[in-house]
Image 1 (cartoon, rainbow, N blue to C red):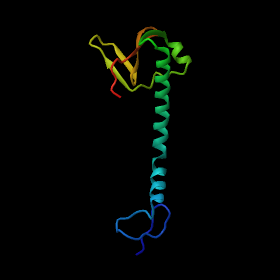
Image 2 (tube, rainbow, N blue to C red):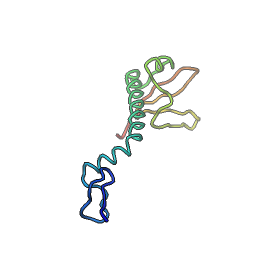
Image 3 (cartoon, rainbow, N blue to C red):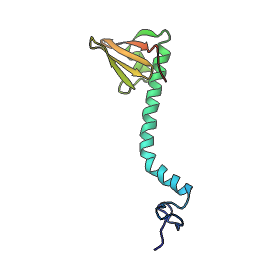
Image 4 (tube, rainbow, N blue to C red):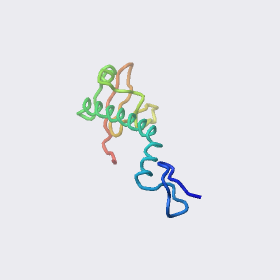
Length: 119
């Protein structure tokens, strides 16, 4: 019984558990399988990077207060962040990597930067 490559259908020779006739077929097969997942990851990473850049540009001093509309006007998306930190008082900081924000009043945010960030 002749074994065939699961990507191109070409003839397989060699090991009995071999699935692909070449590295090119193996790569093509795996790229096709992962393309949907990679699109989602790339889209989310782009949003996180944009959020971080906005926070970095608006917070040059390391701690500042801004209205929400200044963030959203620049394209900030509050749904995406990399981590949170909740204080003993129950306040939750949201971070995009080392840049963060804390909702402090109605439509007002305090921007902060972690002093020590292990990257």
